Image 1 (spheres, helix red, strand yellow):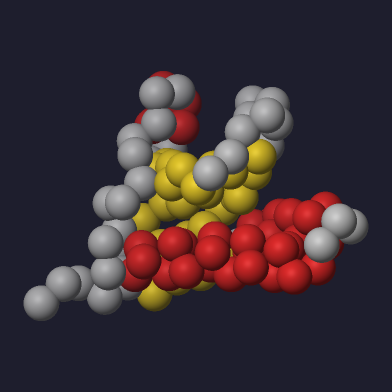
Image 2 (cartoon, one colour):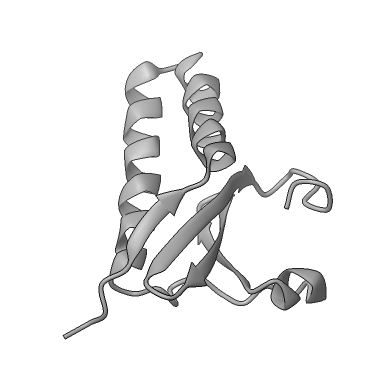
Amino acid sequence: MRKQFVLRYLPIAQEDLKNIFDWIAKDSPARALAFVDKIDKRIGALSHSSHLGRIPRNAKLREYGYRVLILDTYLVFYVIHDKTIQIHRVVHTSRNLDHLI
């Protein structure tokens, strides 16, 4: 049996998802809802497979224990603590990550 993890979105990650939805919804609310649902389902898969994401190349991110899940043009940064997975950020790949994480 696979280990079950609890997912916890930090407030900034929740805000990231809201901003993604709002950005896409300008053109198509239905597409925005579908895309955020896709992100949520993929993140939900972490509860059974916590190591779906990769270990980042950035030494500082590795040092802090981050993993990164790649979803289309978005990156989900998370940390595993015991039986909890903390979702820290959900950001577009074009963003400057140095000051975001």
